Image (cartoon, rainbow, N blue to C red; front, side, top):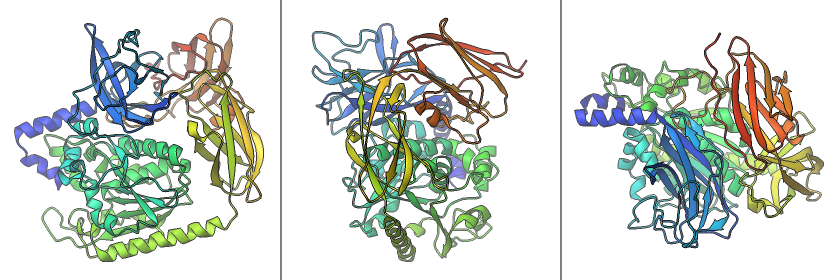
Length: 628
């Protein structure tokens, strides 16, 4: 129905929508983490900029309420990045405020996809007498924007918000649908808290649908048992591509997992938001063992034929329409990957719609029953529940919520049963070989069970986790190692038994090492790899060799025949490794290297890279030249 509204819009509105779509398909999302070697618990500003005629031009900036993950969106081009602590909220770098600059080569945005791991460390203070950042031009007095009249809006995950905030209104949600780039620049795409994090409560993540907002969940939030659950809200520009929003959800939840190490997570989604969450769970769910419950309401699992018509005939097309099309790639491939096996899924649908010329079939007023009850979705659901509600009223139905609350309690009970299985904890300490060296690379703890029947556990860490008790983990014997980009870990791994009988103490030391890693990107168009999405690796090629040389050192690897990606294990063991189109060279000395990749039927790829131990530079997906 929203698609057809486009036909009645004014020429001016259509022009704005066209310009938004054009900007979206020529933009790149830059993401990374800001940390501080100095004591700092106040807001942080992160910005991407270019220089023209000796002046700084801010492409995009964002405000974080504390150090942590950030996302920026920029057009195709080269950018420098910097971050600073903003004690007084004036959006200006003042003397005494901590500052960081991205020290690797300029960031080259291709105008598609995303670049991640652009990490910064605030390690010194700005001084009024000595301009900082002479290499790139940032100095005391640099302002990223006009001083706000009130408290700046935080785009950092975990920001505390109130449901009646104007940014959470229905009007704001619709703006995120019709103008997703403008929305992302101002509001971001973020998981908000309605209260301070409480480790005793289970997080319940709510995800709205097309043109939706956090206020859509008002009834659920009002009746949720807040003594047992803490609501989190994923608020995103719903006019963006669903691949992009799925990857954004992955990025946001990863930052929260690193910060809080939540043990359980329940996910609830309405309408199109269900597609975003399922895509996230299918692609990245194995990295989030805490995800135990997934409930969807009025999900268009089979797509929407009106979106097909909108794409075909509308004079202006919203990016998300391409993904909601019944005949589109996103919907057609959505169920190719299964949900995580430890996750319980329940499907709620509505059938309270009325007959209309636009919806002649049974429907909930917006989505047909055939789409809501797609066979693939029913087959993976533990139970299916139907209600005489329409697409909107299903979010405020007492009967719907009563069943929803019962499912939460069932999940709690299964969680209690799991606790009886004698889980255990670890205490992990990690230090750097030279204390004066500051790493922007956050470590990841890897627990590989000796029992092949169990899954490997990937546990992201933050600097504050060193020396802390971590867990709980399922009981058993594991090989435990630590991976940090551009650092070698000693010992590489150690074997421990986890259970209720004690808390093993592990210690690792991180020493800088050179690393060069990357992959050959899938052959895609900008529409296949829109702003904020992850570009997959190429699978239709035969790599013959990957060679790295710098005159004194020569390394050569070929793709492994392993059925499973063992990149993490190879990294911990200090071994070069290649899997499918991905490769990684480790233990490199500082210097300039030439990379040569030989692919059957294609001209050889050659490029030089500068390697600095302890510093991990992003690597854009490699594009091959036209076949021979």
